[in-house]
Length: 123
Image (tube, rainbow, N blue to C red; front, top):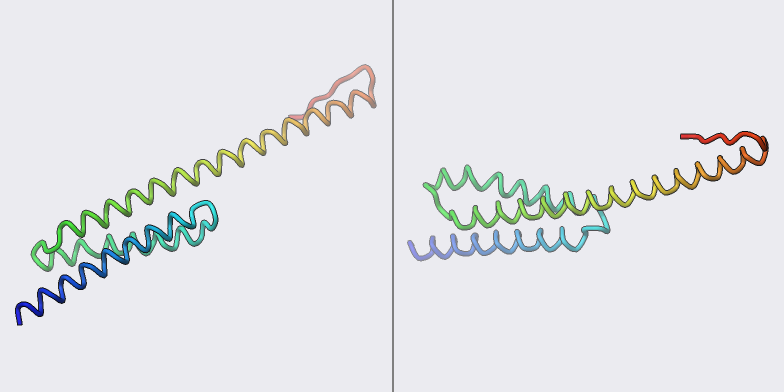
């Protein structure tokens, strides 16, 4: 009976590792394609990590390596997501700045043509 219990625990441990890996791969695959899909997978992984700690404490510290692995994976993904989002925002910001500068140049040129003695620049 003890062997059956250990086998069941090992099976659960393996399933958890597979789920963590699936979520990690899903996040990495969707990064840059679908922010919603990335965040959904990350939320599931984060919930898994948060839920493991109380379960381990209730089981007298069982599976500490699994908990550490899941928490590290969630932290690493969070960092990757933050970096990807920051890079996307930087690109968008630069595009806005570029368009703004082009728009200012265009407005300045138009005003110069209308009022030949004045140049007006909009900010």
